[in-house]
Image 1 (cartoon, rainbow over the protein chains, first blue to last red):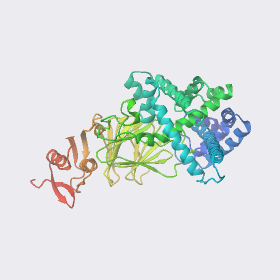
Image 2 (image 1 turned 180 degrees about the vertical axis):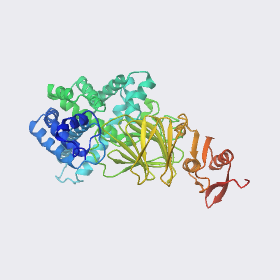
Image 3 (image 1 turned 90 degrees about the horizontal axis):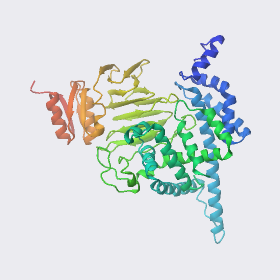
Image 4 (image 1 turned 90 degrees about the vertical axis):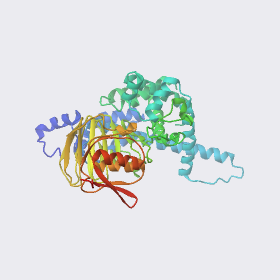
Length: 195
Length: 311
């Protein structure tokens, strides 16, 4: 274990190495979390809009890194931030699915003549909602403006890397990212609030 | 909500993949306006959905020839000039592997004679050669049967490991090819470096750009300099070999034609350099027979390469 070998005096140096991107062991990750907790909570609060949620998620993250897979992790700080980000996204996704399901139910209830609604179960409703949205996305992609659409399709659908696209089209990498961002904004508008 | 905020959000989303992502500046942007975090939620989930839907989007495409280029433009996305026809399918994985364990491994199988482009995750793409299979297990682990060419963007927060025939290839940012006949493995690197670990071995062999490492059933790894232009040439339909063991060449012909070709123990390790044109199994085996100076015989429905009977 990386930390067992670090005398106290060298601990700061160990942390410095970890933050700068040297290989971080899972136990190193736990220590790094302690160091970064305050800024991670700030980030989570900015991300969720709630300090209380941020504290809960920080605890959740701490629990999860206890059982992280062994093996080198690389940049521990980036790893923790991305993991925090994913926890927030999981929450948002679940909340939106619940809201979509409930909206579906309200609509079904309202249109049911004799008050009897067959319950296909939440998974089936989710699947149905997903299919409709997938169809809407495909239509929206077709309607993207020329430059943005080409770059977006190359990267998101064909899996061509940013640098390869930049080389192929003779633009900069930040140009590629800008095109993709423009495309995403268009798609978001086309999809409405239900993403 | 206007487009500018969503564009900004999408730029932040893409920035997260870079080493120099400024997380605190991102937090500042989020704090500036409550609409920012909502916009970011929208864009991040939309991005995830698109990654997950590529499957369905790609079903509209016509999958066809070996070069992976759409021969004709049917399907909804033809407007964008023929998306790579081998139906690149995607596993939706965010920047960190931590909170998205893949419960069910996802396998991408390339049909006989049709190379398949797979975008495994952002900055990790593979071209799986026809007849091969790539399985994604989550947490950056892939396993391969057959051969594939990988293009991995450098990302220090992610280690990519490819398991193949008991060997393990570890990479952080590289372009490399892996081929296996189920027992032997060959890794050739065109950019960056990978490390190769033999089954049951604790030590890693580093393979730099311009080199190929071959590991056999014995777990011994041999490193040779190699011609990088030959690496992954099968992606454009030519089989160019620079000192490759015959057993691997035979495996390539098998996968490409869908009909078995094997080598016996005496010639399996023989080093082969040359170019094989695409064709039927018989024509490819005949070319190989002449170029490599081996003999052929039938074994059931397979062709077996062995020593030249005339020698």
